[in-house]
Every structure is written in structure tokens, then in C-alpha cells.
Image 1 (tube, rainbow, N blue to C red):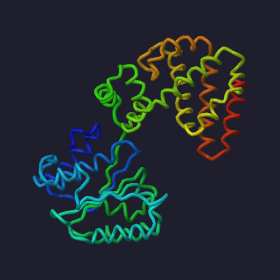
Image 2 (cartoon, rainbow, N blue to C red; image 1 turned 120 degrees about the vertical axis):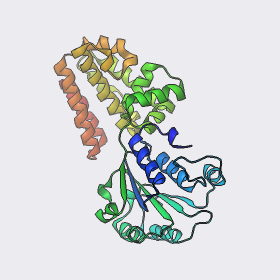
Image 3 (tube, rainbow, N blue to C red; image 1 turned 180 degrees about the vertical axis):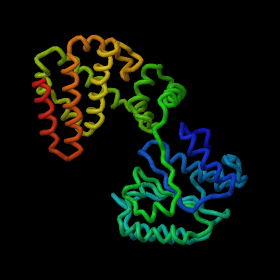
Length: 326
């Protein structure tokens, strides 16, 4: 495992390799980005390179340090995650005691703090001491989805690297090589993952995702052209997939946006569900553009209601009633 295994994030790779090459390695880093976008993999490869005996911009993979790292047995590499929903002050104090211990093998030790944005304010104030007066032999990498939950003093004492969505073509190439799936399906998954390589892998490996998608498309197809989605209200589909409602609503939104795009442009290059082009073409004749716009607005409103913790059954029933009005 080295930097060549990372999909995308070229700017961050170059920045980290330059810090190694120029021996300008900081004591505190913040890796910011959505879960699954590649932060953990990048942090591990960076750590492996820093601990490598060869001291190159890529880990050599053959030295004693690299072998121990790959076997999850390196005494100077530590990964910490919250014990519960958040890091409490007591857990941070335990980590700080480990930070004060000298390296066992090399000239540095590395701590990756997963979900660092889940530290309580008390825990962050305690952890700040490790960033204000860091041991020379210690590198701390904090993984966060968003820095808005971190104290400004923690951010100002760290080097912040923001991970961005990965280009669709790179995700498609990766999926084609790793999973040997056809071009249209790789295109759909890459678009649906919204630049998140971890999400793309999860979709590829999830039979449940594919089953939900096929069932949802059947539900939509069986109701388009009937009495304004009236039979939608008799379906248990949403209740049965309550735990996956975010995915369900996203799939619905993508489907009707594809319908809108196909109706406007008749161009399959712009749609996400390219593997269902014939069905989209058929459905596009059954709904007007105004109706599709109204349905999209209903779905978006339902997503907002669920995020705002509106009662699930009420939010879904309201959406279905609005579908009937459409």
C-alpha cells in the first residue's frame, strides 16, 4: 500500500510527499472530508511513509517497519476512535499519556484520531495542550467530516487538508478494474456516489442497494400513468426500507431528474440511470415537465423534513399525498 493506490486527491498526495521530501513535517494535521472519501487510507499511507526506514516519499514496503505496519503490528502507530458517541475528556487524557511515551523503534510515533470532530469541548480543550506543546517525535492526524465542530485554536495549530469529491471518470475506471462491471453500471454507481470512492465500493458490494433500487424502479413504473400515484399509498415499500430512507429518496430524486433531463434533451449521456434508458424513455412520455418538477420538489421537501426529525410516517404520508395532488 502506497500513494499510487489512492484514487484521486492528487493535490493532497503532492503536498504530503513534498513535506516528506523537504523534511518539513508538521506535528498536527487535519484531514477534512466526507466519510468514505479516502481520508483514512491517505492517513495510513502517509504514516507508513513517515515510519519507513528508507525515508522516501513513498513507503518502500519491504523494510521491517513497513512489514510491521502492513500486519497492523507497528508499536509506534496508533489509531484512536471514540469510545461511544464522542471523545470524552478521560479518553483524550489516556491518548495524551501515550503521546508522552517515547517511540519504541524509530525516531517518531504517529496518532490518527478518527472522528476528531466528535470530541466534547472539554476534550478539545484538554487535547489542545498536545498541539500547543507537541513532543518533537509525535505526529497527530485528526480525521473530521467538517471543521465547524472544532475549536478555532485546534484548527490554527494544525495543517488542514481538505479532501474533495473524486472525478467520475476515475471512479468508473476503478470500478471497472476492481469489480469487472459494465460501463453503464459503473457510470450509474460513480454518479450516485457523488465523488465518494468509499460509497462507490459500498454500492458495488451491496446486494441490498441493488435490490432496493430495482424494487423502487418497479414501484415507480407501476404507478406512473395510473391515478396520480394513488396506489403508492397502499405500498409498504417505504416502511419496509425505513432504515435506508436516505438512499431511497436519493434514488427517487436521481430517477426523476433523469426523467426531466431525458425529456428536455433526449440525450442519454447526461443521465445517471443509463442502464435503464429504455424505461426512462417510456416513462418520459407519461409525465409532463411540470409534473416531474413538482415530484422532485416533493422529494426534496421530504428529505428536509426527515433531516429535521419530522415523524417518519407523517413525512412519507405527506409526500404521497402531494404525489396524488400532482
